Amino acid sequence: MKVRRIMANITTADFDAAQAFYGDILGLERLMDHGWFQTYGSQEKMMVQLSFGREGGSGTPVPDLSIEVDDLDTARARFQAADIPIEYGPVSEPWGVRRFFVRDPFGRLVNILVHSD
Image: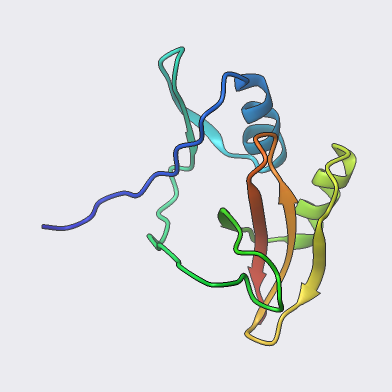
C-alpha cells in the first residue's frame, strides 16, 4: 500500500472566507466544489508530511497547518494588505526556516514558511 494524498479538512460554512484566505492570498486553486465541500490546492507535485510536536519551536504553539511558500516577503505583504494580523515573526529560526504565524478565518494557526538557503 502507498499513501497517495493527505488532505486537511476544516469545518466551515463560510466558503467566501476560505476563498479569500487560501485562494486569493495564498494563490491556491479551487480544485473541487460540490457546493457543500470545497478543496483548494495546486497541480504542482508536493511532498506529503504529517508532523507531531509538543511545541512549534522557539516556545511557540504547535501550528495547525504549515504552508511552505517560495517568497515569504510577498506572502507577508498579502496578509498585511488583507489586514490579517501576524501573530509571530517573521523570524529566522535556528533550524533553517524563516517563518511567521497567522490565523485563518476559522481560527486555525497557520505557519507560513520558507527554507533558508
